[in-house]
Amino acid sequence: MPDPPHGDLAAEDLFVPTYGKAELQRALIAERGAEAAGEHLVTELEAKAVDGPGNDRWRIARADLEVRRRFIQALEACEATGHACPPRLDEPSWSYDPDPDVVVAPKVDSDLRFDLASWQKLSAELFGRACACRTISCVDSMSVVIDQLETRPMPEVQGDELASLSRTRARECLFRLRGKKATPGGPPPSIAE
Image 1: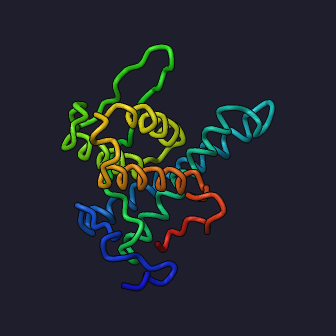
Image 2: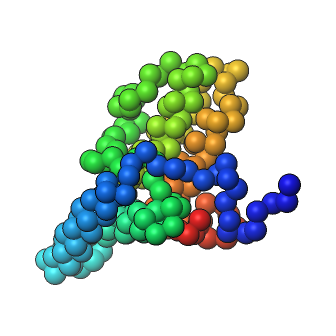
């Protein structure tokens, strides 16, 4: 079977979300409202800041706004073409404070047993939560959580293809939300994919 043309997805790479068009449209309306509030906050912080746009609050607000805009782009692509659909529309999105001094298990819906079934389910959940990020702290903490949890499954299930695919897709979402390329030297991530 020949490879699909560049930019096309193989049938097995298509992801069909569990939510419908009505939920997607409600999410888009809410996200656009949050984007407007984020733009206002960035403008307000720029005007009030003694040291201008170089302060930390402005940088975080600006990064959050950019992540949210990329999330909105994914929702718009999902609505228009059925591609780039986040697996979940978590609201509020992921929240976790990775403290290297005190390791606390992330709050996830899946059991943290790390056998084959639980590892596949957890990897799928990480994929869904990563793609639903709307803030830079969500993106950063999801990266940490994936790295931490990836070493914990039993050796015989660490290389499971389904779980690996879910974590790869999670990282692709995180890269896209950061505005980065998913693979060094490769083409930039495309919302149309």
